[in-house]
Image 1 (cartoon, rainbow, N blue to C red):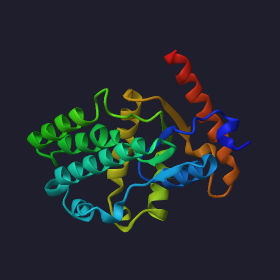
Image 2 (image 1 turned 45 degrees about the horizontal axis):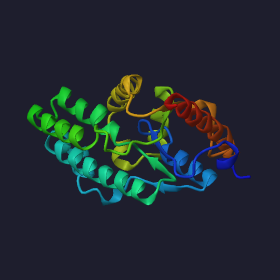
Image 3 (image 1 turned 135 degrees about the horizontal axis):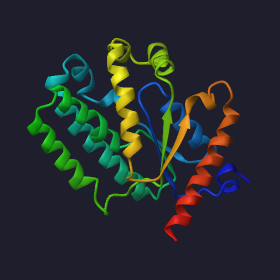
Length: 222
């Protein structure tokens, strides 16, 4: 019996991994996909025409970047469900509006008119009964100092050159966001409770928690 069957995880489940930069979303995505024999959905950063421009000039490119992310994530979400599920998704569509666009509007690096246009578009596309929400959002969290260390060690060059104050603010905004998030069920995991890089077998404990969360959600729907 494989881990998916052992812990009662449906073969068509869609599980999204969320959390700030440095918490290990990509590692978790691949580990869970391997354990459950699911497909992966990774963010295609290399093909993003705005990302480098954005890190050099937040104010000029924040709106363009958010619209690009919204379109790409919406298309990917649609593809996943048309395929029939069975996916682990690296990064959720919800973080863009709940954290990034809101932050830039509040800090003055996104025009309020652009922000309203973006959020209206997001709500029309995503926050409707017709949008296929994930079965579970796995939120990875941990202490700020550990996350910053990971960014400095493993992050992309543009992330390593970003001021620490940016990551401090991002950490706080993520915590505020997840505390009020209700678009789909959430499982919170502390990154200090496991280390998939040095002990890959620890993924079974995480799979067990996912199975339990999905069962609880199923019972609540009955």
